[in-house]
Image (cartoon, rainbow over all chains, first blue to last red):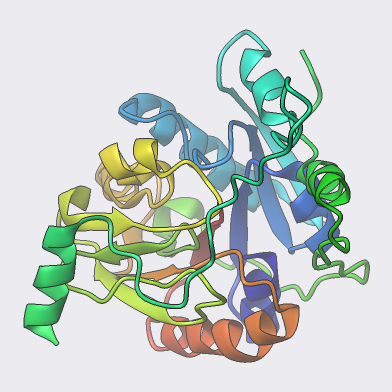
Length: 128
Length: 161
């Protein structure tokens, strides 16, 4: 997304990147970014918590107005919860097992459409 | 409080354990391109672009192998018909509440609140996790730029996963 942000900005459109992956964003270096310390897959907030999600966006937009140095990442201060348990789970590579064996549980990157469910596939096939 | 999860380091460790060559993350140490914001937030029309694999029911879903396509999703209706597909994150929460990766309902509410001036009628869904930086820059980015340029918006909100 940072690369898209850079392309948009070069074309004359201001951008703001949300992120919950600080190091990835820092490396790809978009013009403006707002970091929230949340688990992967929850970039825009905790599920089913509309006010949390709105507050994250309010703070991010305020940041967009404030940032005047290209490449700045501000911290919205939005956190998953008071604890660190999710980070401990997230930082396990998940490769080594207790029995000494190894698993690779990454999903296979197939080059055919990956529908959320079968009804979606039928809906799309009916439309196209 | 632990520091932010370092996904670059985590991926390196995982690939090491699996015996794979290191993943090549995009690295752009140069100063990013810059276009100043010209309007107050309350007058700013925002376009949403999300790379969590969002599509609308009835559209062809993304595939998981460097899919550089985009999906155009209307923003004037609730997120109930928005679907997500991706190979690299836990999809279950986002399938229950797509707003956590594609916050279209929240943006509409912020327009109603007067925080932002407006929301572009169309949002762009795309697929992150394109392993080829070249294809992300030569195929995906120009497609999104073209789409956004036709919208006449003041700010693009990008939501990666």
